[in-house]
Length: 266
Image (cartoon, rainbow, N blue to C red; front, side, top):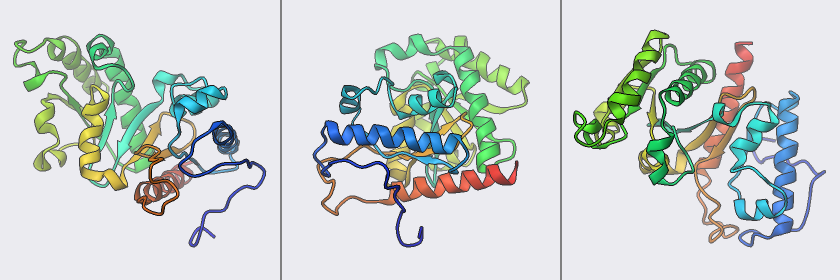
């Protein structure tokens, strides 16, 4: 079956048209998300692969979470701050420290504790779900030139460097703060397994530039496997046959690989 098509549960259905989002489609999407999460949490499925959603329409039908990541975390009894988003592609993995917040709010949200907590989750997941022994975590700087000795900001010395020292004391191979403009160069990418970035675009721009059609959003820190393609709804081409399925295929494949590693390791 999986070699030719994806089986579909027939118990949930409703009216919908590709490329024309409405409340009926949003109701079906929310019901499907709930059912898939329930099945996986109960052990009847190996993982959840979510598709992009129209958050505004979901909110109209009772969805009260910022996104699917927070919904799945809550359903699994995990605090939202411990459900870590990782973007993974063939050439790069990145974790944004802050996600859907205004850029002006980022400096005030970055703390040493947050960096340490996200890096711990990322390192543990890379070992458990991706089979990487002693994962290397590169921590990006916030400011240009990593602050240049305080000339362009002091977050590197005041917040980021202490977090890196704390991670090293725990045995996590953390390095940085690395100037973000050099961290993703071809020669630099070989020196780490995941880059912990300070804000959304710092993490997503390089990932999408390198692996747009193969990028996967993986939620780390959950008791279940959850992945999603790293792109939006693209309603303008939905149902036309022009969409590239690469990222969805990659998300399904990655979920299966992570689930098999978990099963093999008990």
